[in-house]
Image 1: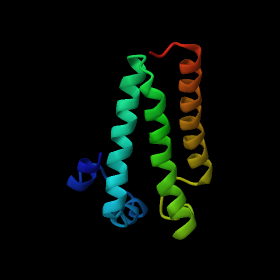
Image 2: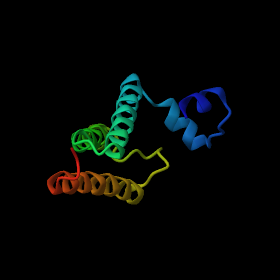
Image 3: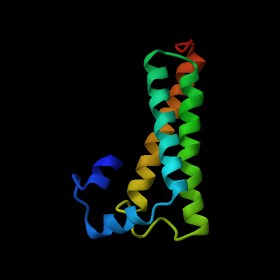
Length: 112
């Protein structure tokens, strides 16, 4: 996705361009870590591995931490982002639901 944006193949609104231009190396690193954790958690869940639970919780934490950092120390929920508080809460709620479901599967013994 980032390569499409950088190449210009994916058009952005002026608001999106400003948001993308404000990203730091930390933001890129967190994005890569989140993607790797979420991808490996998904594969682990499809393979019914117990590690899926830990990977999903780690992905959830890797998502919450930078958002809390931006909220508390910087500019609240980023005013230049296309996501408002409602969409962000739905996204976080969905991630939390997946984590709870993995916990349920683990306790039920479905994950090995």
